[in-house]
Each structure stands twice: as C-alpha cells, then as structure tokens.
Amino acid sequence: MNIAVFASGNGSNFQAIADAVKAGRIKANLALLVCDNPQAYVLERAKKTGTEVFLAERKNFKDKSGLEAAIIKEVEKKKIGLIVLAGYMRLLSPAFVSRYKNKILNIHPALLPAFKGTEGIKDAFEYGAKIAGPTVHFVDEQTDHGPIVMQAAVMVDDDDTEETLAGKIHEQEHRIYPEAVRLFVEGKLKIAGRKVIIVRRQNGRQH
Ligand code: GRF
Image 1 (tube, rainbow, N blue to C red):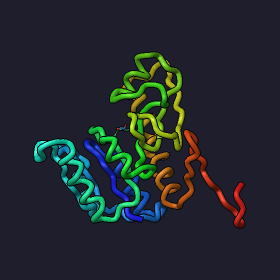
Image 2 (cartoon, protein in one colour):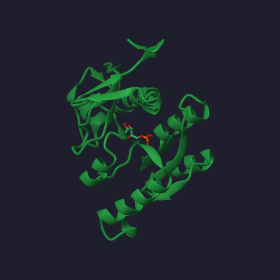
Image 3 (tube, rainbow, N blue to C red):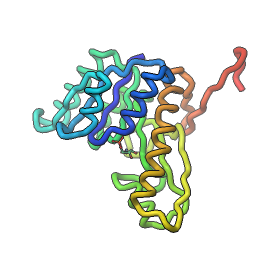
C-alpha cells in the first residue's frame, strides 16, 4: 500500500511513521508528503527520508477546491491507499473527506471528545485535567469527530507545565500513530458505527 502524510509544521509524527516504515514495522511505502507551508521543518525531514513532496500552498490556487483538486490529482497519481493527517492545519472539505471515506486518519493531542480544536494541549492543561493524551481517529465530515482508533493516557502532574505536558503527549503520539497506521495497512481496523474494532487473528480465528 502507498501512504501519504499531510503535515504543516514540525513533522515529528511524520518522522515516527517514516521510521516505522524504514524499520519494516509498517509494510507500506511512504509515497507522498503533502505540505501547505514552505517554511515547515517537515520538508527537511522528507528530504532526509527521500519522500516525495507536493507543496500545496493555498496562495497558488484560486480557491480551496482548486487546491484540493491539485492534491487529489497527486493522491490518485501515487495510488494512495491511506492519508495520514499529522499536524495538517487546513480543514479538508466534506467532498474531499467523503471521496476518501474511511481512508483518512488524524491525530489529535487530546482525549476526544474533550478539547477539540487547535489548542488541545493548552486547553486541557488550563482546564486542570488530571489525565490527558492523544487520540488517533478516522476523519469524517466534522472536525475532530470520526471513530476513535486508539488513545493513550498520560498523567498531568502538579509540577507539569504546558511544555512538559506536551512532551509527554508527543511521546505517546509517536508510539500510537505508527501502530494505528500499521493496523490499517494490515487490514486490521474494522469500523462499526462509531466503534473501531481491532481485528486480531490467530490460526484463522478471530479472538
Ligand atoms: C501533534 O501534536 C498532533 O497531535 C497535532 O499536531 C501536532 C503535530 O506535531 N494534530 P508534529 O508536526 O507531528 O510534530
């Protein structure tokens, strides 16, 4: 399977997935990085890992649908079977999402459905949550909403700052996102309504 990562910033999750592909833990090709920000550090990472980049800058297109049409062209050309959103700061249109229904994953740095939006870590910290952590979910037409694949919990300690909490959450992201991608690639994620079932087979039996 060919996979594409969409990212706008640092790209530490891109890196975690690229490393898992390289190590053979994810049996897929990291065929494409779609990035909307020419300053993003993820572009350096893509260069180092030899990943092809499609720079999709909004200003180069008349409107959002023009931008998405160009992205779709790339995605089709590369025969992408899974789109992995990893800090992609642009909302995908309902048309884009429905075209790749159940083929787009996202990671959010809070325990959904709490603290949706772009400041998940800050919001959880300021709210005084005692447990925080990232969520990997399928993308549907609503933001931070689709069926949950995996979550990880971290304790918020009294001496945590927003930065130290972010460090703990990112560490868990880098563990669970490659794992969720691996399960998808191996055909082990089954969506049943809002629930995602992880299919584990042994001796041909499901258990
Ligand atoms: C992560 O915290 C992720 O949960 C959120 O955006 C951030 C991306 O970080 N969606 P990075 O660019 O992968 O380092």
